[in-house]
Length: 355
DNA sequence: AAGGCGGGGCA
DNA sequence: TGCCCAGCCTT
Image 1 (cartoon, rainbow, N blue to C red):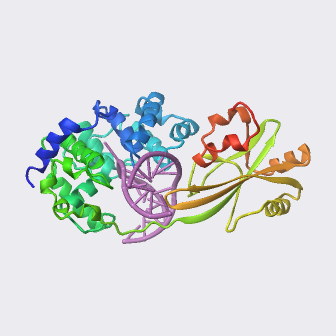
Image 2: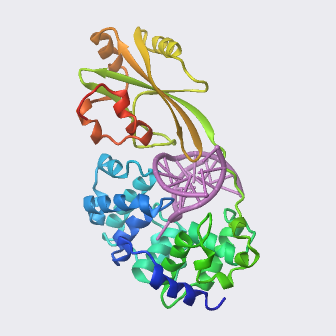
């Protein structure tokens, strides 16, 4: 296996991807790209990267950004805690590191949102330090080459593949080596239908030798989807619509939504009406606008949108003043960061209007 | 050690 | 539909 690094290095120079964050040694840009690319495909993250760097070209501008602006730039990318942690880390860098990104693996890893993978990525790409990256690509490549049955999502697996990756690492050029093994995973050693005929290390691969590529990597945990029923209430008055910001330890933290009631069973229009009457002591008209099933990795959301109308403006004001909701003009809705579930259905939910 | 966190692409 | 993606944080 001694020539593994040479083989993938050679292959990388010929077939590797040209990516904007590879054209620079600026640790800030590399950091941003790595956070965006956590659990995110390169294609999906590309535009976000450009917009983000344009809006926040350096650590200081990111540190002092408004939360809304931040979430707006992240809107649609998912895993929103990444954005909040990113800003938290930027503030740490400004306050404790003189606005300079730390230059050792250990110090980099103490920053919020930076784990073993991202610390190794920044350390190697920006400073050429000898730390092997271990991401989904690396797990797949190494587990196939060695036909290793240890589940990659166990602590034993993490330890095994991390130390293996570091043994194989080309210490003379860690940056290129790390890029090479990840590109090999992304372009050739793909999850389904790997292109083993084009693989520079197929003769070293135990899985290829036995035709068992599909058996690797081995995973232990199963994903189960939790079913939730979200009943969104659409209140509109005088070209204003009621919204609220999501908080707590739940999905979409920091994004906005319409007032919502969650239920264990589907809610009907009548149930919503009763529910509101108990809660507000006021009578309202309720009409169902739209039903949508929305899948997340770990949750199956059944969303129903209801239009709610108070019989009088006075009632609306009295009710509204007892809540912690906000209102926003309909024509300013595009400034508000919403989850994709809401963003994608705005046109169907609202009266014709310029948004 | 386990569970939670988005959204999109692909077979 | 299920799996995967340049993973990490909290409990």
